[in-house]
Amino acid sequence: MKRIYNIVILGLIIVGMAACKEEYEAPGTEPNNSVVFSSEMSIGNIVQVNGLIGFGDASAGVVDRIWTVPENVATIEDEDGNVSDEANINVAFSTAGTYQVTLHQIFAGNAFVGNKEIGTEYDTTMSVTVLDSIDVAFTATHINDDGTLGSALTIGNGAENEVIASKSVRFNYSAVGAPNEVIWTFEGGDPAEVEYDGNQIVAGDSDDTDVRFKRIGTYGVTLIGRRDRPFGGDTVVIENLIKVIPSTEPVDLDAVYDKEDEIVLNFSREIDPTSFGPSNFSVTIENETTWEATVLKTAVDPNEGNLVILTLDGETLYDDDTIKISYTPGIMQTTDLVAVEAFTDVELVFLQGENLMTENGYDVGMETSTPTNWPDLGWGGNWALFDLSFSSTQVYSGSKSMYMEWEAAGGCIVDHRDDLGAQYTFGLESGKTYELGFWIYIEDLGNADTGDGFMPDLRFYPDDWSTELAFFFNDEFPTGEWVYQSTTWSPGASRDFYLMMRGYNASSTVPMNFYLDDLTVFELNLRP
Image (tube, rainbow, N blue to C red; front, top):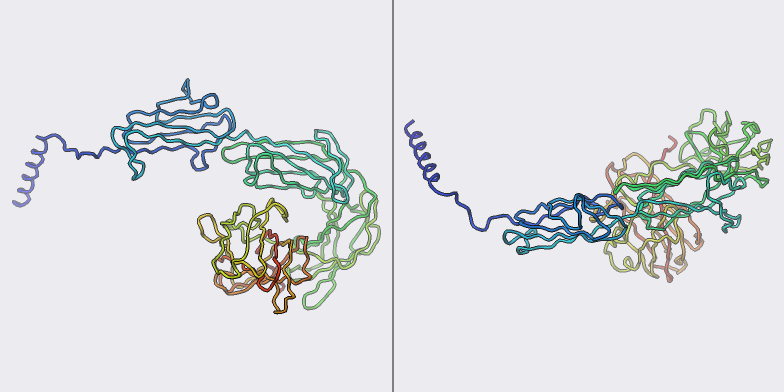
């Protein structure tokens, strides 16, 4: 107890001695640091006309400051002029463009920006991009049978521009204010809705959208442009723009596909639902053996009258089935009284499932990539003899595709990475089978007849090299058109994968140039 008592007395003496002196202050420790920010720093100081952007001075040791904004185009909230000495200001710009906001600071002593000494006075300049309010508009033009453009449509409510059933119209929009999303809705059209990534759109740019009108009636068109941040949008609604009138031309079967174990026949015009029945159709299914399925019921889709639905009796459709449909003429006809001609053994094309590559941002459509996102993996030799870019010259969908140029005796080896250099991955499960596919448009084909037995090829490898997904291009491979290529993959492990893409043109004496678009990996439902 005595020991504790002595410690207490000693502590009281020290406290008393400290109280008799002024508080000690180490020299040069006053914090003088410049810290400046804006409310829109995370999006590059982008603001819409007349929208507010905030600027703040959180610096320590400031004895005086002056904010300055451009005269005539910018105003500071609660200030009469274009300068302010407040720590925080809100600014509005009246005209689109790029402008500078400056801050002049005077500190009580030498100041720092991070670890860099800047003296007692410091100027900061921040660039601001001011966007116009979003404004969208569109034009439309008839498409002739030979693919050329015909006359322009009149754009206005109630214009009722006549379009013959099964014919197409090309729509073209203009946009200012940099919308990051552009959405078309076409009543009575195929497609009924189209969406574009506006991050790839610059002022005045557009993507052509071709729409086929198959159903008789009068229809409107809606165009929406919108931007998340800074928030803004514009909507154009034109009612009764198009009047689809009857046709005397033959009826086309545009597509045959599956939907929930039913078969969908997509015709070029509306079909009279009273003009056909199950006895008009036959369906065969092939998978190791071949058998004829019974068509139990037929109907026209109530919302899209050009779609005929075939319901089978007790059949489940699997992705590895080969399904063929035939029609024996009866009285099936369009609503404008044109008979449907016979067709035999038209093969069903299964609709693809969810594209698993997109789950972590993989740029499957080549819309946002730059060459740095598809780096050369450094193998050297013939694998380095290529050039990779992105182009709008040929696209399968969207606004861009990858353009790959392999030199004669060249090739490539690349993978896909984000802006920080990390590979994009997607998750797959062992015990399942997947289809990997892509669309390719070959402009110049490398030659395969050089005598060494090798031909140009494109191969995809998972990161563990556990399989090889190979595609070969012989001298008869189609050029000048989009061709879908696919193969199956059954991974041996359940985990996240990334892919490497290796191209071979080393045996070719000529370059090979092609466009690549819409990479897919989706799960297959195989017959047990």
